[in-house]
Every structure is written in structure tokens, then in C-alpha cells.
Length: 118
Image 1 (spheres, rainbow, N blue to C red):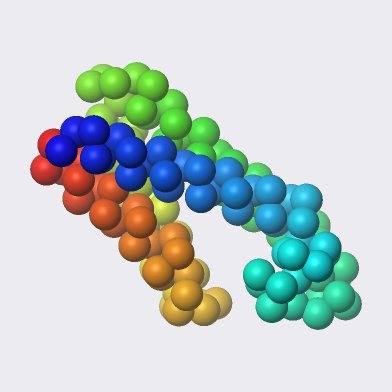
Image 2 (cartoon, one colour):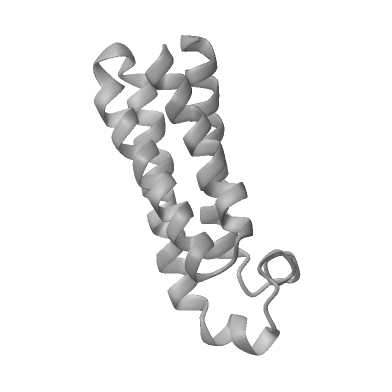
């Protein structure tokens, strides 16, 4: 179960690294606009806000990767960062789009559950 917990945690970290790229660098590009379903005008006007959001996603990815690198001593950090992702995903699902729960909160919840069981 420990290997599954680590693999799921690293998957969540990779997702958030991808979110960083999308929000910081691709927000106003066709791929970013298609994924987030935005107009060119909205993407242009909200680019700075999206980049800030992307930076926070990068911090989550870094924290998750760091917690795995720490091994057993990083268990508390891993639980903390996974819980942060679950809360952010639930909030995003409530305030932005229900898809956020599936894309963000669910993978983190699975990783958190696997971590608790390992």
C-alpha cells in the first residue's frame, strides 16, 4: 500500500505541475483557453490572476514531491499537502465547476486514503 500511496501522491504532484504550466504559460493560448473554456478576451484580462493561481499550484506540487522525498519523516507534510489539495478541489468544485472535484480533489483524496492505510 505504501508504494500505491507514493505513486498516487506523485501523480497529484504531477497534475499540479501541469496546472502550473497551464495557468502560468498557456492560459491565453488555444490549449489553455480550450481546457478552461474561456474566451480570448477573458483570458487576456485574467492572465495575471491565472499566473498567480498557477504559482500556488506549483507550491502544492513542490510540497508533495518534497514530502515523498523525505520518506517516512515526510508523512505529516504529505498529509498536510494532500489535505490542502482536497480542500482546494472541493472549494473549486463548489465555486467554479464540478469538474474540479473530479480532476483535483478526487485524486488527492485517493492518495490521502492510501497514505493513511499504508
